Image (cartoon, rainbow, N blue to C red; front, side, top):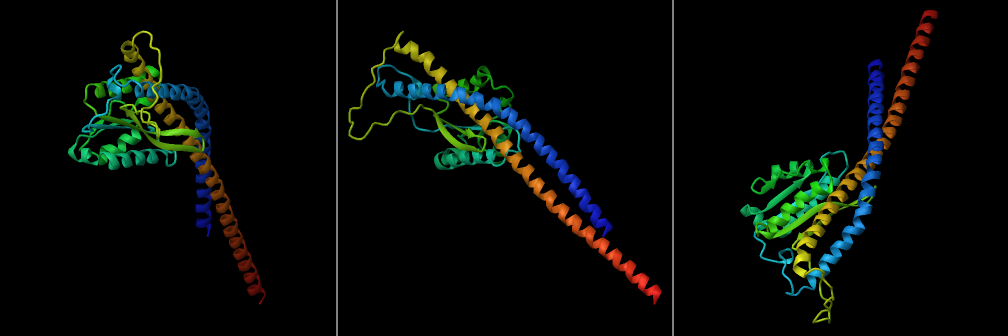
Length: 298
């Protein structure tokens, strides 16, 4: 019984130690989340409006000006960019993003995967660790695995620029991005967005001709689109990274908070078990003493 009590005491100490670690990690994630949340909340309205403007412009060109970023062609060489975190302990966040990417690959690019024409660009270690083991016949781009060490616009723009150059040169035919969209600390949504070619606006039913927006371009259309479209696409890719960054910290803060609560519950249960075992030991010892005294008297 003494050995059993010692084991329970050691386990209580171990759980309390783990609880201190999870509590500290929750506080660190909360501090990082505030900064990451502020960054994405400032970026998202700007990026969404720019993307809306880009879709409107490309949907209304109708041959007036040419741009390769809206050109749809047969998808022989697709790209899936998987944006995950580089660290774990954030619940099911990374696995959900990876599941979204895998579902898109199985749904749309299964044939290209089998022929080895699928390219997977990994941003973050967790996605890289998953795909390098299971998608050996695909082209895995590892140049941007450590991208989250520096999320400055210029650094992130290197990835989007590489993707745009590849699409423009017809090296890639379609590019999709799997990432985690941040809503709040408790809710993050895995999404897969079409990055290139830029989606066109769908015409409404009954609107056969469609309404062409009357944009005034200064300087010329070609000169403006040559600089405007890459800039908007780079901003959109920056939003994907900031969304995932905030989602990671939100998921980790929630996971560590839950782990801390679970540790507290476990300590309570262990203390009850310890006290019961201790009471049983004391009762047994008292019974032995009383029994011994009775035997001596007899």
